[in-house]
Image (cartoon, rainbow, N blue to C red; front, side):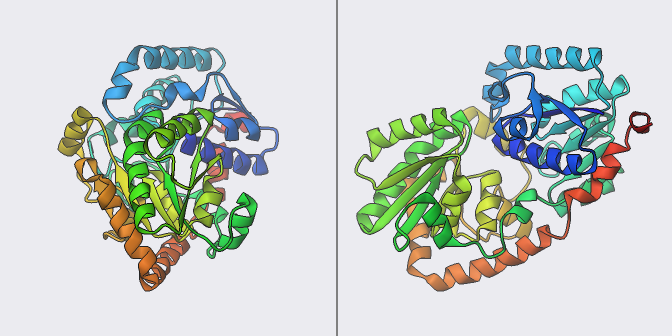
Length: 380
């Protein structure tokens, strides 16, 4: 049985790898091909194109890359039309994936989309295209499944694999030993995101905030991790320019250990905010876009929060800073307040633990049989 699979960025690559392993537990002979990153390739996916071509963010950057994205989608469609897979799975990246999913479903290929677009938050009329493009939607969070059920789109809430991978009580000292850093120091993690544009917009305020914290608390130490060498070098160049005196230790592909080792985290909005929550860390969430992209987002986005901890709790558990509110002072102040008031951290960790337990109630393994039987002829 051949499965087409497509992920467009680092978080989708990790989800795709987990899904491949879950499916192969049921069918070890499954073959996967499409687009994936290092994790999916290591799990056994044949990547036909470099995933970096799909790693774009916001509203404006995809327009600049539109000719290449159109060609890539056309090439993928022709490939899967010539060599039809028994099932196609699109992971996140809805602007790219839903277009190809719609075409593949029209030629008789069953389609699963894993990770709901934020259709519940903005551009809700996309639900009609989704209904035509997919045979099954897999959502990471329960509030998303409720939205699809309301619109009669086949859906399963599968939870987030990170909830099972990260222990309810992370071991901070073990993470520090794994990173070979001081077990007794106080560390703040700086996690500006995995995309090129996120480093561009977030590096300066993150580093200047850390510089401010260090000036007020000279005993503090800082950690950062990046998805690849290119992002590492981009952030390192900003560090050398803006804050070379900062005691900042760099890592590549060690974000989990860095979060587990940290006492507090400054993080760009996205999946990393969920990971920080699962590691039970106090955090400040920040996000900046280009001015045109931000103006458009303000017109379209309906949700009151951008951070996953706040969305899951449906309340402002941790600070969110957006666009002009992203300043070094606004980032540094709540982090220092957390570190000065351990009781606030303890209260936050209790809520994070409760949310973690809720996510553990669903399992991806519960739907693998359903996915594999969407095309019953492939199993005969």
